Length: 104
Image (tube, rainbow, N blue to C red; front, side, top):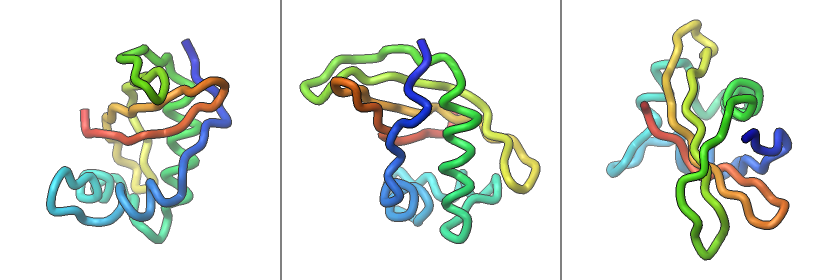
């Protein structure tokens, strides 16, 4: 199954969570290896849309908020490196939204 290519990827999710250092469950250092940072957060959004949302999504669990899906893929990063990631998305009614990503 493929998710909506127009899924919501909140700017705040990228700029205030994934691309800043967090003492617990930090992902910014992993993404930094690929050349992603706060200065080019739009590139991460673009790459998630063009490189990850075009891949097959697999349902994981149904919650009170909607059906969660997982997409595993490789990001071809701005600095030429490749990062393998697992992304989590949620679908509520007809709305698809990015939840998070993890190194895979």
